[in-house]
Amino acid sequence: MNRVRTQPLPTIALVGRTNVGKSTLFNRIVEAKKALTSDIAGTTRTRNIANYWWRGREIRAIDTGGLTYDDSLPFEKEILEQVERGIKDADVVLFVLDVQTGILAQERELARRLRKVGKPVVIAINKVDSVKWRKRSEDENWKALGFGEPFFVSASSGSGVGDLLDSIHHKLPKEIVIPDEMIEEVKHLAPGEKPEGIVARIALLGKPNVGKSSLLNSLAGADEVIVSEVAHTTRETFIIDVQHEGKKFQIVDTAGIRRKARVEGGLERMGVSASIHSLDECDVVLLLLDATEPFSKQEKHLLGLAENKHAGVIIVVNKWDLIEDHGQEYRTEYTNSIRMIYPFLRYAPVAFVSAKTGFRVHQLFEMVEKVAVERAREVEDEVLHGWWKTMVRRHKPVKGTGTNHPSILSFRQIDTNPPHFEVVIRFQSSLHNSYLHFLENGLRESYGFEGTPIVITVRKFKK
Image 1 (cartoon, helix red, strand yellow):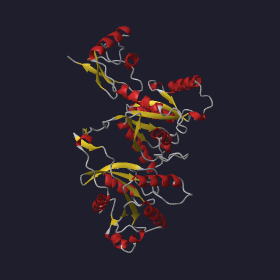
Image 2 (cartoon, rainbow, N blue to C red):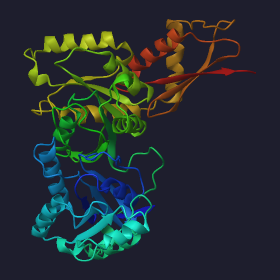
Image 3 (cartoon, one colour):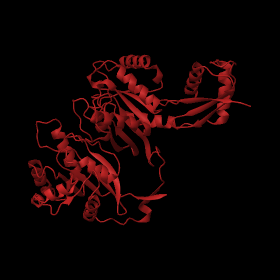
Image 4 (cartoon, rainbow, N blue to C red):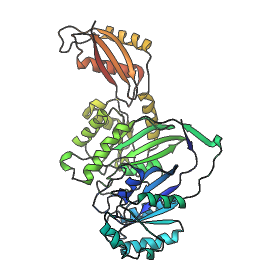
């Protein structure tokens, strides 16, 4: 068991203008590819947050968006708000500059603002990737920014990062000694296992501009990510812990996923890949549809993707505030249309919300909790034994491609999250897929399993 402290973690925030290598340095510090990195200015638009350990102490790191102080550029105002929030949350600010461009006007403006904050600031001169750049760095008056001696680092190779972290470590608030009774015991987590106390891990999934980031902000009750009308604003996955009525949920906002033919290279492809990978670790997917747009093949692809990952699914119809008819009759008609177009997800509940106004958004927490419970549901062997005997009497097994008529020897549950059942039949026989669907429907009628896929595998018994 590990012992973890209940006090807030000491926090650093990485700030700087666009394309100075903040995200690369952030990844180096937290020792993970948490943030997308590229040579394209403005890659990071929202805050990335991760924890790292240094000298036996756990520290929180925030990677903020790159600044230009050019109001004509898209998202500049929103990025500035995120940067200011990161600085506010930080105990130490890590000011990152590029040795290869020197001090630009944007750095001077940011330095002026940082001096007003009154928090410790550490200067990191990045991209010192060779002796040539180290020598050139001596020509720049870095001290003119007003924060003392800088640290010369190469985020790509890791050179100088250790000394930088030492300096940050000394500037952080002294660690508070907490009585033993206030220290919680937690176990090491297996891959994919939820952190203790988390009801469910939720992934927001949908095509670009369907309102995922707006929904995340509404669920979190704060402007955690940038929201805009420009498609594909979210290029990175963004993870946040949210509390609702004393219960903790972990939410992942993913990059909008478009059809392959429309996915651009580089950043967008990386963001889509991260989005798909995030589904492997989530419990429940909130699949967003746009109430103002007709159904498309893209939604069907995304629903199939969620089903293939065996995650729980809740279909969330967003922008319901823009629909004139809010009545129950129209909601039922809309739901039936979804069931007809996507029959393979008939088990998924449907919610009608407006992320923009907050209409019925918080009902999603209750729905997610219910789906999480259904995913973990176990049915005892004795109960299942009587159940499948009844099902066989109701409808005899249907032969598949085997030469002999199948006979079910046993039926049991072998796993949860999602519910996984095993049916054992005689050797040299097979079950038709339609009969597996019959068993799945019977399980749902008898035991629920709302919102979660059911996996049924067939094993042949040979004497």
